Length: 68
Image (cartoon, rainbow, N blue to C red; front, side, top):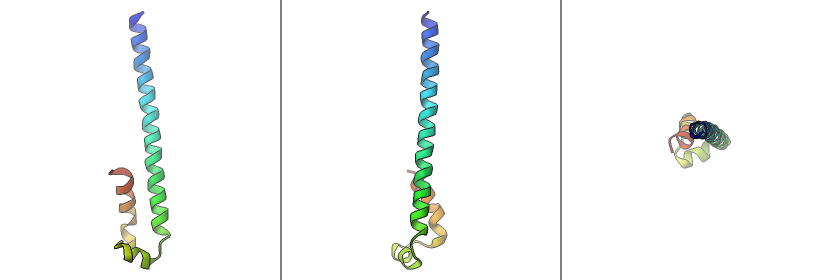
């Protein structure tokens, strides 16, 4: 009987890990999309004031979401 409960616990842990991973990925993707949207909505002048060129927006959004 101990073996069965240990197997069930292992499966439950794996399911929790998969759910946590899916939620983490969704959160990061939402941050990426939000950052892209906000930076794309800025004018060229506002971007220049921040020291950002429009060609850098994708990279900055990626760094904000996935490299932190």
